[in-house]
Length: 283
Image 1 (cartoon, rainbow, N blue to C red):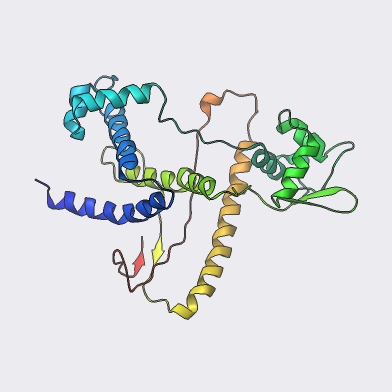
Image 2 (cartoon, rainbow, N blue to C red; image 1 turned 180 degrees about the horizontal axis):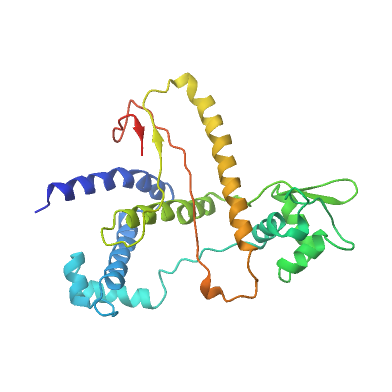
């Protein structure tokens, strides 16, 4: 029998699951597929987070915790061990080149802004940047692709100016995957960390502001101002990340490296069909 607290928690997750269901249905993914990955998540967490003396949780305990049968738990654990549910977050060569263009001191001016680079020549050039950070991709091919996606522009003299800090996916499913892995997952992980009563360290920052009193005529202007200001905050934090990335010797062991994500977001909802109700304030 569910407690009142459990019902409230499940009600909150029902709210969060509605847009997830909307996205999955749009891409032709139904409940059976979602159910399978949900089972995988429950088994994975129960196995790795609740073991005793550093060992994975045994199948019987996982079955008790998750409500799945021992046969189902065993099947899913075999899939996990085979790497069938593995998701890899990839950085494209174009994204890495643009990132390094904004962070490496050899390719920045005295104000810390990316230099306008000649394609070839001595010292800092686009070709030297690509040879250093683009693997075996020819500089000409990299230039063509960066121009195609609108990340750089080329003047009549052949000099290249970077226009964007990041490469945005063109396909809708790529945009979705990027948004989930770099936005939704870090945010939910932060929530899980902050509400964990056993955590030892201080809470991670998790802030939002909200109101239910914005007129329809004011929404376009508010959306534009929010975009500009939040985009400025993101670029400032990105500068901070880049400074730390270049602070230490690149030859140092990667065992001491950690992933850090800081996110800001904008949300709006038609008050005539709210999924839930806020009281004015901030959190």
